[in-house]
Image 1 (cartoon, rainbow, N blue to C red):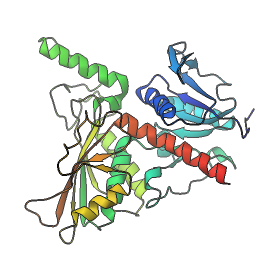
Image 2: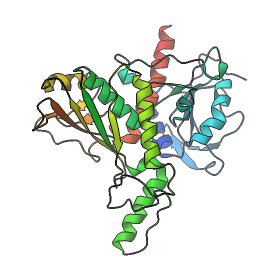
Image 3: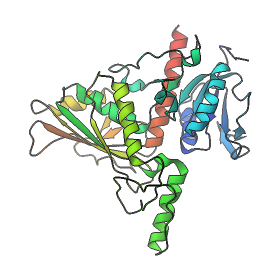
Image 4: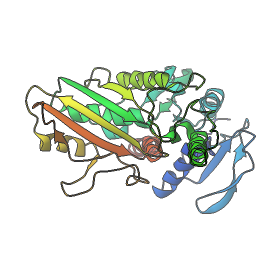
Length: 347
């Protein structure tokens, strides 16, 4: 039965054992999201795992037919297959679906939303998901999409002639399996032992990669194509779309990036910095250390070093930044729910 109860404030996290699922639970708790209960759901292999929510011990529950009963928000943070199999059941039960896996946006079944950019680039209207006259499914874009769209929105203030973003994904973008493989490879290489490469199909430890091994799925090329597609769809002609390249780095957490923009005339760097601050980006002062993968751990916003002019190309400017990839993605998802609650309260 659909819940439809206005005072039902239960939240469900599908994929609760994933890195995103664990981080999402922390963000909900730290932001004091108004919920009566956080229900942790996952595949049968993880069901029964003891954890905690809201400071109280709880168990990860198996996904079942009635898992979404009286749930107001259903976050999908695990694998795409779980989203595809269960999002309609969540919606039929009356829950608002917020997908972090990207599968619903890619198939046109959800509207992507980056709340921090709403003033400049509001989410595009979408058809009612699943044919429902009442519910829309939402997609919270992946961290590289949030980063690149934020770069495009900030740079648009000064109308760049061209722009490019070099993205440096950490292995945690491949969930715990990526973490485990980098850790094992590092240990084995230092001990002169053969390395495991089930995830990347090549050596990622002590290495930079422009592509993975042939057996790695998804490939780095397909990941880049998906990011480029999602960025172009979100910007939809409302801001210049940057060129995008990916280089896999041997780091566990933190999504680093370098961006270049060229303008018709030398840019006013402080004006450019102000445009980014207005989007919630934190910019280091001239005497502050530049952000790093370590320094942004646990931080919710994108952080930039001071913007620099190119030494040879007068109209060119460089940006260096980092974001906690798990925290950025999950905070964006929670902000979608917060915005929807605020709209409902104002209606």
